[in-house]
Image 1 (cartoon, rainbow, N blue to C red):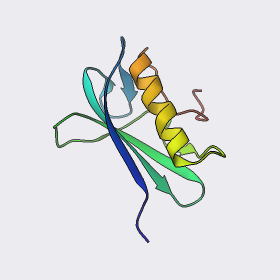
Image 2: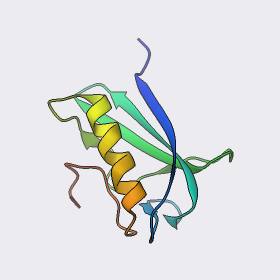
Image 3: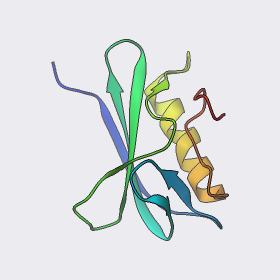
Image 4: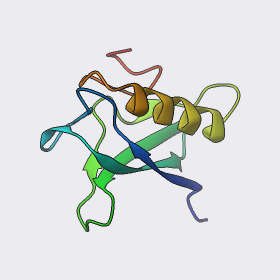
Amino acid sequence: MSEERLQDDVKAGPGGAMTDEVGVVTGDLTVATIGESGERARIAVQYTGADEWYTLTGSPAPLPPAGLAALHAEVLRRVEHGGGAVSPPGSAED
């Protein structure tokens, strides 16, 4: 069974997005929201065009009732807004 994956490019707002591996990332980013078993999704970010992916702090996150697309849209909105401590909705830091 393949994972469902949604991916889009976004420009991070002021303060960027917090990752587990390298701290805050800023600028042009690619965000991937990957559905996992157990009603959770993993969120990864990378500098657009780079090879390395980083875990968005707070990932994996529970899927909302509206599903993976709704979670992905909310994560994109939060990254565009910025603030440094962007984390997936429903995570411990929400």
